[in-house]
Image 1 (cartoon, rainbow, N blue to C red):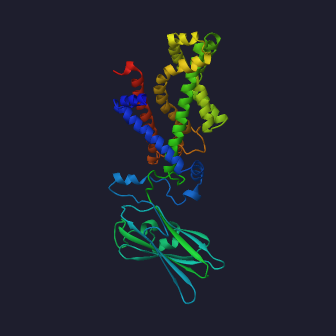
Image 2: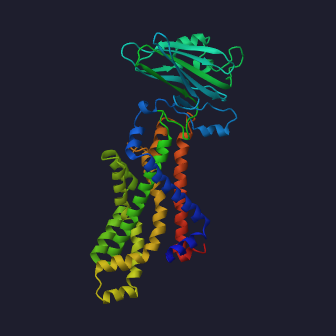
Image 3: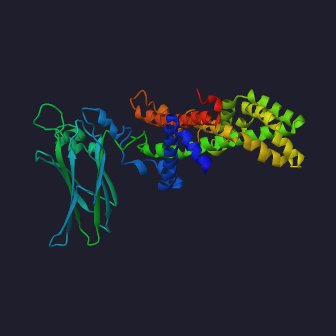
Length: 447
């Protein structure tokens, strides 16, 4: 407990360490919350759901915070259904037994542009005779625009933009524009105010039902925007946190610990054991690390666990072996090691209870500082198309943005968002690692 208090007392001396610790703790807490809130199976199923899951989202639109930096506000997407605020339902029954259900979708339109499309989704139940719906719009200036009349099946989708009859009634103007402009005005600017979409559904059977849902595909959506498949980019940005941390921490921990143990064993036994370890290290140092990973991902498996295992295997016998060996050679000659030998301590006890614990403080800064390198490695492989094909990760998001020419089409958010998260992660671990290096290495405290 006293040692922990001393550690935090030292941490307070370095503002960079405090910032890095806050970032790291925030990432860890966020990763736990993401895993609990969006379980793995649910996240994978949702991400790979395609149009069936994401069909009600607009395609490739930036996040809503784009409007914070614009004078002319872009249209925000909305999805209104029964029970939501702004949706009212009235039901009446005629003397002949016909059931009339009137659903009114009210929404405030304060934007300076026009939506991509407006869509009504119908879900009905019936035995023989389909429900019949009548749709109209009431504008802020109290104009009534007839949208359409038609029968609906069990499921029915009515996109306003594809209705040629509606376009004719709007004097040839496409519906996503014609419904929002003043027909008497010269400029095609939207009329701002409260709009109403009124859907009157008539059912002809006692047990028949009909429900409507109104979706407006805007020019901005959510806090992260959408991609070319209409998927909300919030999911890969959030799930990228636990994936990046798991890969980075496991790789850094596995590499650092195994490197230290192997170096300690080689130093203690010396002779042929140390010679073999040194020769393996020298061979591994000249191997093309990234090229081997690309070959494994191309010809064997792109699973993140396979890539993680290969990464650890290739990162054990590196320059760290020789650095640790130099330290262990000094520790090996210490008097307490001679004392342990004198009372008959076994080799394993000396290695794991006397040699290794002595340099664990030197291990921690290097371990923390190496996490960003492995996080960037996983993202780099995904950008090159060698990432796990199933997981929604930051690197995969950048890869898909690049594949769909996001930079050339002005979809900068698609690439900037995961890059910013990568930079924050790397900066947090790096600043914490540098501060820990100063704390555990007295020679650096005055620098």
